[in-house]
Structure formats: C-alpha cells, structure tokens
Image: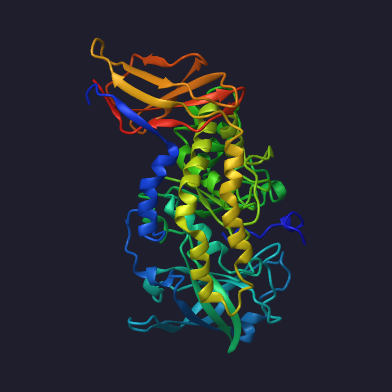
Length: 498
C-alpha cells in the first residue's frame, strides 16, 4: 500500500537603557539551543516537578523483559473484534531490568489488570497469538516506581521500530511535553511475542514533570470520523484527566478558534500558548508526521489545560512519522491550525518555528541517532534506510520552500528614546529579495504577553513605537509579499522601557 492509501490511520496511542540592540535571525537562535540539545542527547528540558523514580524504564538503550500470564478466564473476555468493548482483565505481571554496571531490578510477579489497544492498522487479535498492543494497570500497592499504567505499543506499523523514539525526542528537545520511550521484550503465557515499545503514559504521574497544574487532558482522534471536532462532548475527544462532565475550557477554546474575524491571535492568546503550538505543528511537518493534528485527518494529539484554562498541545501516535506531511492542506477540522495560518501574527510564528527547527535539524544528527537506536531492535527491525533518507532530504525541502518567501530584513536596531518615555525607535534595512517585498510587519511584545503588530509600507526603514507601558520589550520584524510572510529577525535582548 502507498503512504496515502495507508491513511486509514493508527488509533491514537492515547506543549536598559537606551542602547542599541543588534538583532539576529531565527536561525541564529538555534545555534545556542543546538549546543545544549546535542550535549544532552535529546534529554527533556522540562523542569523536574515530580519524583521520577521510573526514568530507568524509559531508556531506549536498555531492553527490559516483560512476562504476562493471562488465565483462560481472562483470555476469553478479550475479543478479536476491533470495535468490541475492551474491559481490563486479570493477569500476572513480571518485569526485569538489567543494565551493565547497575543492579538488576525485578518487579513481580504481581497481580495486574490489562487490555488490548490499537485501532485501524495496529489492532491485532491477542487470543489468536498475534502481537497485540497492551495497556497494563497496576494496583495501588504494587506500582513500579510510582507508575499507574504501562503502555506497550506493538509497532506493527513501524517496521523500523525507531520512528516513535526519534520523533518524541525531537518534540521533547523543543520543550514540548511528549512521552519518553523504552523497549521491552514481551512474553505472554510463556510464548515470546516480540519487541514492544514502552511509551510513557501521559497521566497524573507523568504530567507534573511538565506542568504545575492540570485541569484537563483531552485526547483527540480521527478528525470528524468519530464525532464533531467542534463539540467538546463528541466522540472525537476522550478525557484522560479531569472532569468528564465539565468541559467548558475545551468548548471555549474551540468556539474562539473558529471565529476567523480579524484579531484571532489576540482572542486566542489568553486561551492557548500559540508559540508552543506552532512548534508542535512545525515539528509535525519536519518529522513527516502525516497522522498528526495539523495534517488532513486531525489525529493523534492531546490538548492540556492548566488551572487557568490555558491550553498547550502534545503529540501522540508518531509510529508512521518520517514519511510525508503538508505545511497546510486547507482541511477544516484542525480549527486551531486553520485559524493560526490565517492570522498574520500566528502565521508568522509558524514560519518562525519552521525556520527554527531547520536551524537545528542537521546538528541533531538524527541519522546517527537512528543507527544507535536501531542496534537495540536490529533482530526484529526492517532497518532504518527509509528513515535516514527522509532525514537527509528534509532540510533541502524546507530550503526550497523558504526561497519562495520574501527575504528577511537585516540590521534591526531598537532603542528607547531619551526625549519621551514609553517609546522605542526601531530601524532596519530592506533586503535584496527576488520575491517582491510589498510591506513590513513590525511586532512587539511586553514580557511574555501577546504580540502587537504594526504593518508598514515597503519603503519604510524605521518606525517609532509609542505609548508603551513600562517593562521589558522584545521587537521583531518580517517582510511581506502579497500574503507571503518571511521569517522574522528579532532583537537579541529585551529593551527596557520606563
């Protein structure tokens, strides 16, 4: 089957003064971040807000051993019909972890409950001996280092067995909350079933590592196939954390995102971290994650709201990444992404996010990482040649697209004015561009607040921003060309206004 024919996707595998400031391009910002990212080999940048005793379980360099004993009485309750109910059934669980130079850990045998997982493409019949994905739930008194659940993906749609590991590492290195992964060799009733991916379950155990508070975690799947994406109570959404009955936060987000009148960004900013979300959507394109939120199905994603009701997005279901994707396909179900690309400020942030990832891509050395991870699964993997070919080609594809946009302004300088309080004087140089420049967009932001945009003529090379409240401001500017938006050039440091 072709990749497009395979689009009946996998089910979701349930975010000082008046001195001149020299600016720099978005790509330059990547250089510092790259040094950090390479040094930590994709370690998560999230602050540790919770005890993380279980981190050993999510190490792709270690193969844990999992043994499940499922009695006949439980096996009889497991259906081979994908659409049937999937109750948790009784089983006995044992897990062994061994890494050179460290003590061996063994959990169990202990009583657990389990069920099969998977949908279109990934569902398999466990009673028939097939390699079915599994969810395991631990009792409160026998949780391995605090984990409540274990999610074991069968990887039947990823012959390389490395796609999820690599893609989630990329998301995490961008500061996006994403699951960690490890490998497990699984035996059921004494019969070896193969290598599975242990994907961190994003629940009230994992989420505190990323978020101080959680109001809701919603899982979105299969666009409008399972329900109206615009209805918070439709079958498209599953509540993984928070109240099932009260979904006001999500409905407000959806209703606001569908209003495409001018001012979309300003209305959305209090409800959604759009800088974080544009990173998710840009990464979905770079990773070829055609089965994600910003793609034609509107699939495989989480929406997380904090106590204030502000949302970020999290990726899921990346087992078919490193294949193909669209920057924007015009489909109607991903309301957040649709609104973003039609709003000038948010559209610019999306372009900046793409350019930022482009600056990091080669230095991440994903090709080498693919080889390293492959060694763990080589006995059962089909190889990583296709994945590495995709990785090698992606920067050139991005460059081809970026060359269709107007060039970025240069020599950005922003200074406070001495004669009047509350003013910033901004100057820049118009670039030489094969794509005609029809204007400039000057944008400024107080602290971490919303961006304000001023559109200027194509002949402008300076502008004074006035009436500013006291505080620290960031300024950026980008070129415009009849609907096309260049990446921005941004002040290196903030400007203090008194």
